[in-house]
Amino acid sequence: MARKVKRRAPAADDLTILEPSRTLPIGGRNVTVREIGFFESLRLHAEIAALVADLVEHTDDGNVDLGRLHRICAAHPTATITLLAQACDQPPEWVQALPGAQGDLLLLTFWAVNADFFLQRVLAAVELRRAAPAATGPASSPP
Image (cartoon, rainbow, N blue to C red; front, side):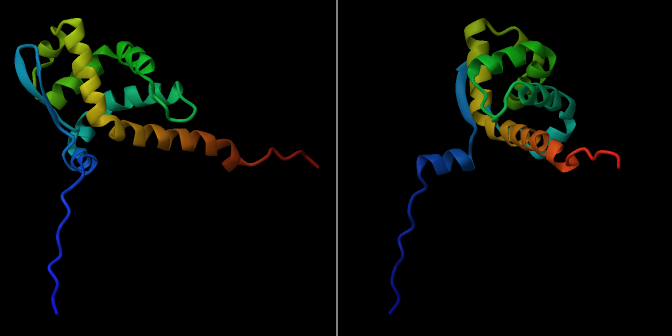
């Protein structure tokens, strides 16, 4: 006899994974901050690589606290503005003109939506850095 199977509703975490975009009022507009897509990441490779390289340089385990994130974004203002503008579909000039608190909100929302994207790259680079000395092996001594 056939049995009716009830589909469970996705949990809140599942929805965040499936649709991580977030909409919020910033700078007098309702702005949707979305995940950077694969092809966008290819076009924005230089900007992404600059942030990832510094994130890798300043972590041993892939953990990125907000203070570290702010310092790295401050060291790469053009890349940060470009990425924020792309993720919220706004002009870079609009992002750059945001007051401090609203800029912070945009940056933190961007990070909440895109952290996995960046951390995958950071963790891969950290693992490569750890494996590099082991891959070369011990130095041999001459006979």
